[in-house]
Length: 373
Ligand code: GDP
Ligand code: MN
Image 1: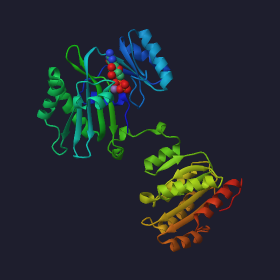
Image 2: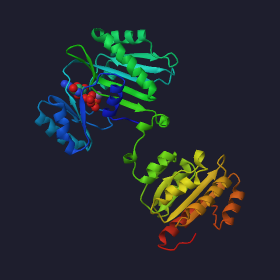
Image 3: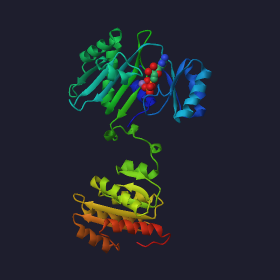
Image 4: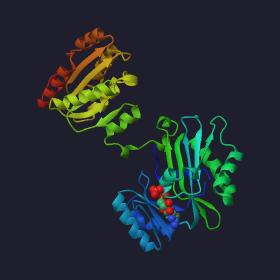
Protein backbone atom coordinates (compact mmCIF):
# COMPACT_ATOMS: atom_id res chain seq x y z
CA UNK A 1 0.00 0.00 0.00
CA UNK A 2 1.71 3.04 -1.33
CA UNK A 3 0.41 6.23 0.20
CA UNK A 4 0.03 9.56 -1.52
CA UNK A 5 2.20 12.42 -0.33
CA UNK A 6 -0.72 14.07 1.45
CA UNK A 7 -1.47 10.82 3.31
CA UNK A 8 2.17 10.38 4.26
CA UNK A 9 2.21 13.92 5.55
CA UNK A 10 -0.94 13.33 7.57
CA UNK A 11 0.90 10.45 9.23
CA UNK A 12 3.97 12.63 9.78
CA UNK A 13 1.81 15.35 11.30
CA UNK A 14 0.13 12.83 13.58
CA UNK A 15 3.56 11.69 14.75
CA UNK A 16 4.58 15.26 15.56
CA UNK A 17 6.94 15.75 12.61
CA UNK A 18 7.02 19.28 11.17
CA UNK A 19 5.07 19.55 7.91
CA UNK A 20 4.05 22.61 5.90
CA UNK A 21 0.51 23.93 6.17
CA UNK A 22 -1.43 22.36 3.32
CA UNK A 23 -4.82 21.90 1.67
CA UNK A 24 -5.95 19.24 -0.79
CA UNK A 25 -7.96 19.98 -3.93
CA UNK A 26 -9.55 16.73 -5.04
CA UNK A 27 -11.11 18.29 -8.15
CA UNK A 28 -11.18 21.55 -10.06
CA UNK A 29 -13.96 23.08 -7.99
CA UNK A 30 -11.80 22.85 -4.86
CA UNK A 31 -8.69 24.54 -6.26
CA UNK A 32 -9.56 28.15 -5.42
CA UNK A 33 -10.58 27.40 -1.88
CA UNK A 34 -7.45 25.32 -1.28
CA UNK A 35 -5.17 28.03 -2.67
CA UNK A 36 -6.92 30.79 -0.72
CA UNK A 37 -6.59 28.87 2.52
CA UNK A 38 -2.82 28.65 2.05
CA UNK A 39 -2.02 31.94 0.31
CA UNK A 40 1.14 32.78 -1.62
CA UNK A 41 3.90 31.92 -2.13
CA UNK A 42 2.86 28.29 -2.27
CA UNK A 43 3.70 24.96 -3.88
CA UNK A 44 1.20 23.11 -6.05
CA UNK A 45 1.91 19.38 -6.15
CA UNK A 46 0.22 16.62 -8.15
CA UNK A 47 -0.78 13.69 -5.93
CA UNK A 48 0.47 10.83 -8.07
CA UNK A 49 2.13 7.73 -6.70
CA UNK A 50 5.34 7.90 -8.72
CA UNK A 51 8.36 9.98 -7.79
CA UNK A 52 10.25 12.44 -9.94
CA UNK A 53 7.37 14.88 -10.02
CA UNK A 54 9.69 17.85 -9.73
CA UNK A 55 11.48 16.89 -12.93
CA UNK A 56 8.23 16.04 -14.69
CA UNK A 57 6.78 19.49 -14.03
CA UNK A 58 4.18 18.18 -11.60
CA UNK A 59 5.47 20.25 -8.67
CA UNK A 60 5.55 24.04 -9.15
CA UNK A 61 6.05 27.07 -7.04
CA UNK A 62 3.56 29.93 -7.34
CA UNK A 63 4.30 33.47 -6.21
CA UNK A 64 0.74 34.75 -6.23
CA UNK A 65 -2.70 33.30 -5.55
CA UNK A 66 -3.73 33.85 -9.17
CA UNK A 67 -0.63 32.01 -10.37
CA UNK A 68 -1.28 29.16 -7.99
CA UNK A 69 -4.86 28.72 -9.21
CA UNK A 70 -3.70 28.70 -12.82
CA UNK A 71 -0.79 26.28 -12.18
CA UNK A 72 -2.92 23.97 -10.06
CA UNK A 73 -5.51 23.74 -12.85
CA UNK A 74 -2.81 23.01 -15.39
CA UNK A 75 -1.10 20.35 -13.29
CA UNK A 76 -4.39 18.75 -12.40
CA UNK A 77 -5.28 18.47 -16.06
CA UNK A 78 -1.86 17.15 -17.00
CA UNK A 79 -1.74 14.52 -14.24
CA UNK A 80 -5.41 13.75 -13.76
CA UNK A 81 -4.67 13.78 -10.05
CA UNK A 82 -5.63 15.71 -6.93
CA UNK A 83 -3.45 18.71 -6.06
CA UNK A 84 -1.82 19.41 -2.74
CA UNK A 85 -1.38 23.12 -2.10
CA UNK A 86 1.27 23.89 0.50
CA UNK A 87 2.86 26.97 1.89
CA UNK A 88 6.26 27.34 0.22
CA UNK A 89 9.19 26.82 2.50
CA UNK A 90 12.17 29.16 2.22
CA UNK A 91 15.00 26.74 2.81
CA UNK A 92 18.71 26.81 3.33
CA UNK A 93 19.37 23.19 2.48
CA UNK A 94 17.67 19.95 1.52
CA UNK A 95 18.38 16.74 3.42
CA UNK A 96 17.53 13.20 2.45
CA UNK A 97 16.18 10.68 4.93
CA UNK A 98 14.74 7.21 4.49
CA UNK A 99 13.94 4.04 6.40
CA UNK A 100 13.54 0.61 4.81
CA UNK A 101 13.73 -2.95 6.08
CA UNK A 102 17.15 -4.43 5.36
CA UNK A 103 16.91 -8.04 4.24
CA UNK A 104 20.57 -8.82 4.86
CA UNK A 105 20.70 -7.87 8.53
CA UNK A 106 17.02 -8.19 9.36
CA UNK A 107 17.17 -4.67 10.75
CA UNK A 108 15.94 -1.28 9.60
CA UNK A 109 18.24 0.57 7.24
CA UNK A 110 18.42 4.32 7.72
CA UNK A 111 19.84 6.27 4.81
CA UNK A 112 20.56 9.94 5.30
CA UNK A 113 22.32 12.64 3.37
CA UNK A 114 23.00 16.32 3.60
CA UNK A 115 22.57 16.52 -0.17
CA UNK A 116 18.88 15.71 -0.68
CA UNK A 117 16.54 16.96 -3.38
CA UNK A 118 15.61 15.88 -6.86
CA UNK A 119 19.14 14.68 -7.74
CA UNK A 120 19.35 12.00 -5.05
CA UNK A 121 19.50 9.12 -7.58
CA UNK A 122 22.48 10.74 -9.31
CA UNK A 123 24.14 11.25 -5.94
CA UNK A 124 23.62 7.59 -5.06
CA UNK A 125 25.40 6.63 -8.28
CA UNK A 126 28.15 9.21 -8.43
CA UNK A 127 28.96 9.95 -4.80
CA UNK A 128 27.49 7.14 -2.71
CA UNK A 129 29.79 8.06 0.17
CA UNK A 130 27.62 11.15 0.66
CA UNK A 131 24.76 8.90 1.74
CA UNK A 132 25.18 7.60 5.27
CA UNK A 133 23.85 4.13 5.99
CA UNK A 134 23.03 2.87 9.47
CA UNK A 135 21.34 -0.34 10.48
CA UNK A 136 19.00 -0.36 13.45
CA UNK A 137 18.64 -3.84 15.01
CA UNK A 138 14.91 -4.39 15.12
CA UNK A 139 14.81 -6.00 18.55
CA UNK A 140 16.63 -3.05 20.09
CA UNK A 141 15.07 -0.21 18.13
CA UNK A 142 16.57 3.18 17.37
CA UNK A 143 18.45 4.47 20.41
CA UNK A 144 18.62 8.22 21.07
CA UNK A 145 22.42 8.22 20.92
CA UNK A 146 22.36 6.55 17.49
CA UNK A 147 19.83 9.13 16.26
CA UNK A 148 21.95 11.99 17.61
CA UNK A 149 25.10 10.61 16.05
CA UNK A 150 23.44 10.23 12.67
CA UNK A 151 21.85 13.68 12.87
CA UNK A 152 25.16 15.25 13.78
CA UNK A 153 26.85 13.68 10.79
CA UNK A 154 24.44 15.11 8.23
CA UNK A 155 23.29 18.39 9.81
CA UNK A 156 25.35 19.49 12.84
CA UNK A 157 23.54 22.84 12.90
CA UNK A 158 20.18 21.11 13.36
CA UNK A 159 21.15 17.89 15.09
CA UNK A 160 18.76 18.34 18.01
CA UNK A 161 15.50 18.67 16.07
CA UNK A 162 16.82 16.17 13.51
CA UNK A 163 17.51 13.46 16.07
CA UNK A 164 14.02 14.01 17.50
CA UNK A 165 12.54 13.74 14.03
CA UNK A 166 14.46 10.53 13.39
CA UNK A 167 13.13 8.97 16.58
CA UNK A 168 9.58 9.98 15.65
CA UNK A 169 9.90 8.68 12.10
CA UNK A 170 11.32 5.38 13.32
CA UNK A 171 8.41 4.88 15.72
CA UNK A 172 5.92 5.73 13.00
CA UNK A 173 7.64 3.31 10.62
CA UNK A 174 7.29 0.46 13.11
CA UNK A 175 3.78 1.33 14.27
CA UNK A 176 2.48 1.42 10.68
CA UNK A 177 4.25 -1.74 9.46
CA UNK A 178 6.04 0.32 6.84
CA UNK A 179 8.24 -0.91 4.01
CA UNK A 180 9.44 2.57 3.22
CA UNK A 181 9.39 5.96 4.88
CA UNK A 182 11.19 8.63 2.93
CA UNK A 183 11.48 12.38 3.36
CA UNK A 184 13.17 14.05 0.42
CA UNK A 185 13.65 16.89 0.69
CA UNK A 186 13.74 17.43 4.41
CA UNK A 187 14.24 21.18 4.49
CA UNK A 188 16.39 23.13 6.88
CA UNK A 189 14.80 26.57 6.86
CA UNK A 190 16.55 29.91 7.00
CA UNK A 191 15.81 29.88 10.75
CA UNK A 192 17.37 26.46 11.23
CA UNK A 193 14.06 24.62 11.60
CA UNK A 194 13.18 21.37 9.90
CA UNK A 195 10.20 20.89 7.57
CA UNK A 196 9.22 17.72 5.71
CA UNK A 197 9.11 18.90 2.08
CA UNK A 198 7.91 15.60 0.65
CA UNK A 199 6.71 12.29 2.01
CA UNK A 200 6.75 8.76 0.67
CA UNK A 201 5.29 6.01 2.78
CA UNK A 202 4.63 2.39 1.86
CA UNK A 203 2.78 0.03 4.18
CA UNK A 204 3.37 -3.72 3.91
CA UNK A 205 0.43 -5.24 2.00
CA UNK A 206 0.45 -8.23 4.33
CA UNK A 207 -0.46 -6.01 7.25
CA UNK A 208 -3.69 -4.75 5.72
CA UNK A 209 -5.64 -6.25 8.60
CA UNK A 210 -3.58 -4.19 11.07
CA UNK A 211 -3.77 -1.00 9.04
CA UNK A 212 -7.34 -1.07 7.69
CA UNK A 213 -7.43 2.70 7.23
CA UNK A 214 -4.92 2.36 4.40
CA UNK A 215 -6.45 -0.53 2.47
CA UNK A 216 -6.99 0.55 -1.12
CA UNK A 217 -10.62 1.56 -1.63
CA UNK A 218 -13.14 0.53 -4.29
CA UNK A 219 -11.83 3.24 -6.65
CA UNK A 220 -8.53 1.36 -7.01
CA UNK A 221 -10.29 -1.59 -8.62
CA UNK A 222 -11.73 -2.12 -12.05
CA UNK A 223 -14.97 -3.67 -10.87
CA UNK A 224 -17.03 -4.51 -7.82
CA UNK A 225 -16.00 -8.16 -8.25
CA UNK A 226 -12.28 -7.27 -8.34
CA UNK A 227 -12.67 -5.20 -5.19
CA UNK A 228 -14.56 -7.93 -3.33
CA UNK A 229 -12.06 -10.56 -4.48
CA UNK A 230 -9.27 -8.51 -2.93
CA UNK A 231 -11.15 -8.37 0.39
CA UNK A 232 -11.60 -12.11 0.18
CA UNK A 233 -7.92 -12.71 -0.67
CA UNK A 234 -8.80 -14.37 -3.98
CA UNK A 235 -6.47 -13.54 -6.90
CA UNK A 236 -8.71 -11.97 -9.53
CA UNK A 237 -8.37 -10.00 -12.76
CA UNK A 238 -11.20 -8.33 -14.59
CA UNK A 239 -11.71 -8.77 -18.34
CA UNK A 240 -14.77 -8.28 -20.49
CA UNK A 241 -15.26 -11.56 -22.35
CA UNK A 242 -17.88 -14.18 -21.61
CA UNK A 243 -16.07 -17.09 -19.96
CA UNK A 244 -15.42 -16.86 -16.23
CA UNK A 245 -12.37 -18.81 -15.13
CA UNK A 246 -12.41 -20.49 -11.76
CA UNK A 247 -9.14 -22.37 -11.79
CA UNK A 248 -6.54 -23.60 -9.35
CA UNK A 249 -3.05 -22.14 -9.36
CA UNK A 250 -1.60 -19.16 -11.17
CA UNK A 251 0.15 -21.35 -13.74
CA UNK A 252 -2.90 -23.41 -14.61
CA UNK A 253 -5.22 -20.40 -14.64
CA UNK A 254 -2.88 -18.56 -17.02
CA UNK A 255 -2.65 -21.62 -19.24
CA UNK A 256 -6.43 -21.94 -19.34
CA UNK A 257 -6.65 -18.22 -20.13
CA UNK A 258 -4.37 -18.77 -23.14
CA UNK A 259 -6.25 -21.88 -24.24
CA UNK A 260 -9.57 -20.02 -24.17
CA UNK A 261 -8.12 -17.34 -26.43
CA UNK A 262 -6.50 -19.96 -28.64
CA UNK A 263 -9.89 -21.60 -29.12
CA UNK A 264 -11.44 -18.27 -30.08
CA UNK A 265 -13.16 -17.52 -26.77
CA UNK A 266 -12.79 -14.50 -24.50
CA UNK A 267 -12.27 -14.48 -20.77
CA UNK A 268 -14.59 -12.53 -18.47
CA UNK A 269 -12.45 -12.90 -15.39
CA UNK A 270 -9.33 -14.63 -14.20
CA UNK A 271 -9.89 -16.15 -10.78
CA UNK A 272 -7.61 -18.46 -8.84
CA UNK A 273 -9.61 -20.85 -6.76
CA UNK A 274 -6.96 -23.11 -5.34
CA UNK A 275 -4.09 -23.13 -2.93
CA UNK A 276 -5.24 -21.42 0.24
CA UNK A 277 -8.65 -20.72 -1.33
CA UNK A 278 -9.71 -24.18 -2.41
CA UNK A 279 -12.49 -24.27 0.16
CA UNK A 280 -13.91 -21.00 -1.12
CA UNK A 281 -15.96 -22.32 -4.06
CA UNK A 282 -19.02 -20.34 -3.03
CA UNK A 283 -17.16 -17.03 -2.72
CA UNK A 284 -15.39 -17.70 -6.01
CA UNK A 285 -18.59 -18.56 -7.86
CA UNK A 286 -20.38 -15.55 -6.40
CA UNK A 287 -17.61 -13.33 -7.81
CA UNK A 288 -17.84 -14.99 -11.24
CA UNK A 289 -21.61 -14.46 -11.25
CA UNK A 290 -21.10 -10.72 -10.88
CA UNK A 291 -19.92 -10.75 -14.48
CA UNK A 292 -22.22 -10.90 -17.44
CA UNK A 293 -20.46 -14.03 -18.60
CA UNK A 294 -22.15 -16.94 -20.36
CA UNK A 295 -20.15 -19.83 -18.90
CA UNK A 296 -18.11 -20.63 -15.80
CA UNK A 297 -15.14 -22.82 -16.55
CA UNK A 298 -13.65 -24.71 -13.60
CA UNK A 299 -10.27 -26.31 -14.22
CA UNK A 300 -8.22 -27.52 -11.27
CA UNK A 301 -5.47 -29.94 -10.54
CA UNK A 302 -5.31 -30.49 -6.81
CA UNK A 303 -2.52 -32.02 -4.80
CA UNK A 304 -2.92 -30.72 -1.25
CA UNK A 305 -6.06 -28.94 -2.40
CA UNK A 306 -8.21 -32.04 -2.73
CA UNK A 307 -10.34 -32.52 -5.84
CA UNK A 308 -13.26 -33.97 -3.84
CA UNK A 309 -13.34 -30.95 -1.51
CA UNK A 310 -13.40 -28.61 -4.49
CA UNK A 311 -16.13 -30.68 -6.18
CA UNK A 312 -18.21 -30.62 -3.01
CA UNK A 313 -17.73 -26.87 -2.81
CA UNK A 314 -18.84 -26.41 -6.40
CA UNK A 315 -21.96 -28.49 -5.86
CA UNK A 316 -22.85 -26.62 -2.67
CA UNK A 317 -22.25 -23.30 -4.42
CA UNK A 318 -24.54 -24.29 -7.29
CA UNK A 319 -27.28 -25.30 -4.84
CA UNK A 320 -27.06 -22.02 -2.98
CA UNK A 321 -26.35 -19.55 -5.76
CA UNK A 322 -28.43 -21.21 -8.50
CA UNK A 323 -26.24 -19.93 -11.35
CA UNK A 324 -28.10 -18.87 -14.48
CA UNK A 325 -25.29 -20.13 -16.72
CA UNK A 326 -23.62 -23.46 -17.43
CA UNK A 327 -20.68 -24.67 -15.34
CA UNK A 328 -18.03 -26.70 -17.17
CA UNK A 329 -15.76 -28.68 -14.87
CA UNK A 330 -12.48 -30.46 -15.23
CA UNK A 331 -11.45 -31.26 -11.67
CA UNK A 332 -8.41 -33.49 -11.41
CA UNK A 333 -5.83 -34.55 -8.85
CA UNK A 334 -6.01 -36.01 -5.35
CA UNK A 335 -9.27 -37.94 -4.84
CA UNK A 336 -10.49 -37.24 -8.35
CA UNK A 337 -12.60 -40.44 -8.41
CA UNK A 338 -14.54 -39.11 -5.46
CA UNK A 339 -14.83 -35.71 -7.13
CA UNK A 340 -16.18 -37.39 -10.25
CA UNK A 341 -18.86 -39.20 -8.23
CA UNK A 342 -19.89 -36.00 -6.40
CA UNK A 343 -20.24 -34.00 -9.60
CA UNK A 344 -22.21 -36.72 -11.41
CA UNK A 345 -24.51 -37.19 -8.45
CA UNK A 346 -25.29 -33.48 -8.61
CA UNK A 347 -26.24 -33.83 -12.27
CA UNK A 348 -23.11 -32.28 -13.74
CA UNK A 349 -21.10 -33.77 -16.59
CA UNK A 350 -17.49 -33.73 -15.41
CA UNK A 351 -14.81 -33.59 -18.08
CA UNK A 352 -11.29 -34.95 -17.68
CA UNK A 353 -9.31 -33.19 -20.35
CA UNK A 354 -8.41 -29.51 -20.03
CA UNK A 355 -8.55 -28.77 -23.75
CA UNK A 356 -11.88 -30.52 -24.12
CA UNK A 357 -13.23 -28.48 -21.20
CA UNK A 358 -12.00 -25.25 -22.78
CA UNK A 359 -13.53 -26.15 -26.16
CA UNK A 360 -16.82 -27.00 -24.44
CA UNK A 361 -16.86 -23.65 -22.61
CA UNK A 362 -16.07 -21.75 -25.81
CA UNK A 363 -18.83 -23.59 -27.66
CA UNK A 364 -21.38 -22.93 -24.90
CA UNK A 365 -20.41 -19.26 -24.77
CA UNK A 366 -21.07 -19.07 -28.48
CA UNK A 367 -24.54 -20.54 -28.16
CA UNK A 368 -26.65 -17.51 -27.36
CA UNK A 369 -29.46 -18.54 -25.10
CA UNK A 370 -30.58 -21.61 -23.24
CA UNK A 371 -27.28 -23.43 -22.97
CA UNK A 372 -27.75 -26.41 -20.72
CA UNK A 373 -25.43 -27.51 -18.00
P1 GDP B 1 9.35 14.75 -6.19
O1 GDP B 1 10.17 15.32 -7.31
O2 GDP B 1 8.23 13.90 -6.71
O3 GDP B 1 10.18 14.03 -5.17
O4 GDP B 1 8.62 16.00 -5.47
P2 GDP B 1 9.09 16.90 -4.22
O5 GDP B 1 7.94 17.09 -3.34
O6 GDP B 1 10.33 16.35 -3.59
O7 GDP B 1 9.44 18.30 -4.89
C1 GDP B 1 10.48 18.43 -5.85
C2 GDP B 1 11.34 19.63 -5.54
O8 GDP B 1 10.56 20.80 -5.48
C3 GDP B 1 12.06 19.58 -4.19
O9 GDP B 1 13.23 18.84 -4.20
C4 GDP B 1 12.33 21.04 -3.94
O10 GDP B 1 13.51 21.46 -4.56
C5 GDP B 1 11.14 21.73 -4.60
N1 GDP B 1 10.21 22.11 -3.55
C6 GDP B 1 9.29 21.32 -2.92
N2 GDP B 1 8.64 22.00 -1.95
C7 GDP B 1 9.18 23.23 -1.93
C8 GDP B 1 8.97 24.40 -1.15
O11 GDP B 1 8.15 24.45 -0.23
N3 GDP B 1 9.72 25.51 -1.44
C9 GDP B 1 10.61 25.50 -2.43
N4 GDP B 1 11.29 26.62 -2.68
N5 GDP B 1 10.87 24.43 -3.18
C10 GDP B 1 10.17 23.31 -2.95
MN1 MN C 1 10.77 14.27 -3.27
